[in-house]
Structures are given as C-alpha cells and as structure tokens.
Amino acid sequence: MTASVSQPTPSLLQQKVVSVQQAEHSLTLEWETGESAQYHYLWLRDNCASAFHPETQERDFDLLSVTEDIHPLRIQVNDTSLDIVWSEGGHKSTFLLSWLYEHNYSRPTRARHTSSYQSWDSSFIQRIPRANYASVISDDAALYHWMVELDKLGLTIVEGMPDTAESMAALATRVDYLRQTNFGTTFDVVSVASPINLAYTSISLPLHTDLPNQETPPGYQFLHCLANECEGGESRFVDGLRVAEALREQCPDHFKLLSEQVIPFRYHDQEHDIRQHHSVINVDDFGNIIEVKYNAHIATVFDLPAEVMHDYYLAYRSFMARLRDERFEIELKLQAGQMVVFDNRRVLHGRNKFADTSGRRHLHGCYVDRSEFKSRLRVLAQKHG
Ligand code: OGA
Ligand code: ZN
Image (cartoon, rainbow, N blue to C red; front, side):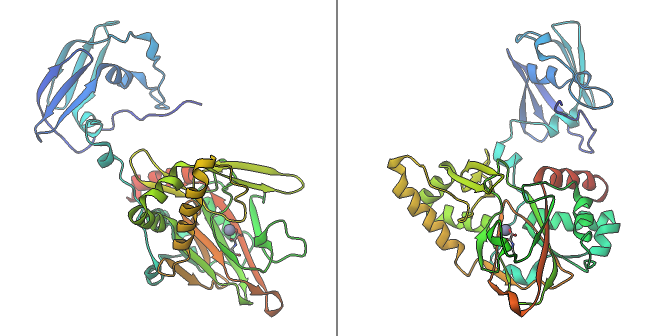
C-alpha cells in the first residue's frame, strides 16, 4: 500500500506574494503578511498536482524520474497561483498560493505541530465529559463532539448503555474497527477461578496502562460496566500526561531517563510470549509528550546498561511516587449502564479490590487504536468541525 498525500484543496485563505527569489535548489516567496517561505525544487516537483492519482490522491510520481538538479526555467506568479516550467521534460506545474501558504515549512516546527491534548488533575472529577449512548450511536454530530472531548482530555463517560453484551462494540465501531489482542476482540473483566491475568481476580489493580508488552499498545479502551454491585471495585484514573509534565518540570533528569531509556515488558501464558522494550514516556520530534506506558505487573527484568541502572531506578521511583500523589488522581465507582472510554496510551487506570461474595462485578472491554480514532475524527470534522 502506498501513502496518500492530498494535493491542493483550495483554502479560503488568499495570501498574496510580494516577491520571488530563486536560488540553486529552492525559491523563496515573500508573502504580503511579511512572512517569507522557502520551497525546494525537488519538493515542489514531488508535490505537483500531476504527481497524484486523480481518484485515489495517492502519489504515483517516481521521484527518480527527475534529476536532483531539476529547477524552474520560468516562474510566473498570478493572482491565485504560481506557475513553474521545469528544466526537465518540458513539465509545467501550477500551485495554488493558498496551498503554498498552508504548506509553508519554514515556520518553526514547534508551532506547526502543537498537541491537541489538555492535561488534567484530580479536579477533573467535576468536569469529566459525559455523552449519551442513544445520541452517539445514531448522530454523527454527537459522535464528533464526544470524540473531540476524548481526544483532548483522554477520558469520558458514556451513559445510558443498553444492558447487552453487544452495545459496547456497537458504540466502539462507530469510531472504527476493534483492536484484537491475545485477550480477544472484546474481553470480560470478571473474577474467575483460574485467572490468566490479575484483572480477572478481585484484587486491587494499581494504576497502569494496558499491554505495553505489545509493539504498539492498544489505543482507546472501552470498559462497559454491566454490574458493579460488590463492595469496593471503584475505578481510579490518572492523566499520565499531567504526571509526565510535572516530572519534566520538577526533575528534568528523571524525565530524560524515562523518555530515552527503554525497559522490557512481557506477557506470557501457555500460548503466548509477547515482549517489547519501550520507554515509559514518549516525546515526539516537536517536544510534545504523546504517550505514557507504565505497568508494574508486566514490566519484566530491567536490562539497562550498568552505568544507568541506579539512576534509572531513581527516575522510575520518582515517576511512581507522583502517580500515587492524590492531587493527580480521580476515583469513581462505575454503575451498570455506564461506560468509561479513555486513551490507554495516556491515561492510567486501576481499580480498588472488591469482595466477590458481596455482589456481582462485570466489565466488558475492547480497544480501538489511535490511528483509526484520529482518522475518524478528521473525517467527521469535515462536516461537523
Ligand atoms: C483491565 C483493568 C479495571 C477494572 O482489565 O485491564 O484494568 O476496573 N480492569 O477491573
Ligand atoms: Zn487494565
């Protein structure tokens, strides 16, 4: 499969070009806003409208069909476009000025890639976004508004879930297809006689993210509460993003170790042995904290370089201590008919122990990955954004 890059969609922005300067490998446009932007010839040729299949919008241009010295023979600026006649193949390209302005890569990268995430602390309990099953299942605008909140804050509650085994997957597939794991496409969190993981007991589960032993841990987690009539069994959540932000501010050396060094995670049973090394905190190329992976139960024997081991443990403990700080945590008891949905690659979850004998507890779970979530959000935004 090939990557898809959508070519010029005219934007309402109509910026004017004041001057064009040509250099050996690029041209520079000065915009009437006072900004100037450099566009490289290889980049321009590679993004000519003709380089994309008219229907699929996937690039079908072969970059090696031109030399690295390709350059304009003629450049003409019109009211809304820039025309180039190239030195090779007599090829002519037309670029909308609005498209060039939108794709100005001379702007500082940080400004072009800001995160949509807003972190929270324990006060979030007062303002957890809530949505209604009946609306989200049937109305795209409601689906969109719920997903916007979920994207931004990483945790929401859906109320009014029908008391059926199917309702969770029906709602999750409104976002997109489900992520299958070794625990199935959907899974039941109930206390059982021979558990294959600690979630299937009645003991407390300390804060964790699910399945960091996977190469890509599952994205959004859906946990539909079918019954929670026992004593205990409250859910606990902490925004890993907020804790990582606090660590970065207060102990930058610890933050650096947790974001640069990798530790091993492993799940194994009779049929599986799934292992992966990961850093506990992931930062993207633009400095945004994009992921937290923490699960004491499946973090296995650390194999860090000897000279790093002690300092790493100090950093890890400092992160753990912050995770337990009640200023960051929210606690709630899910009721039958509620479903919590959260970004498993950002928000840590846990539960208090419960007494099996005091009443039934049954959660039904599944995951939808981040790529599918973001994709759906973009598509819905075209109509509802
Ligand atoms: C899990 C889990 C939470 C709960 O299944 O991964 O964390 O409330 N369950 O039982
Ligand atoms: Zn879990």
